Image (cartoon, rainbow, N blue to C red; front, side, top):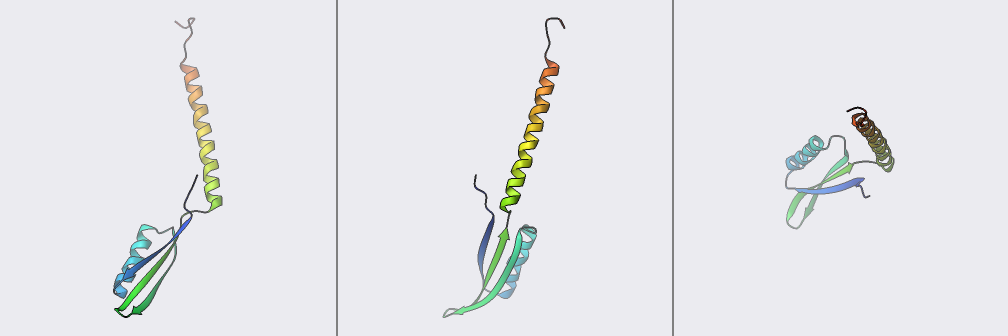
Length: 96
């Protein structure tokens, strides 16, 4: 099994307003996952621009392992309930 734990994104913006909009949209879309951001003003021979960096954290190894354990126990509970219901619905020749 493979699960993504975190990611770092970089975005280009022409203006500071665009850079702030990128950050605001990321905060709205990933409110719990976004752990950090930065906006840097850069320049090169073509002109000035803004580099937006977003840091996202989706889960931790312990969190994944704990969720797997809880999912397994829920499946076991469901399987036991299913077996009980099929046992109750079985009929014998004596019942008929």
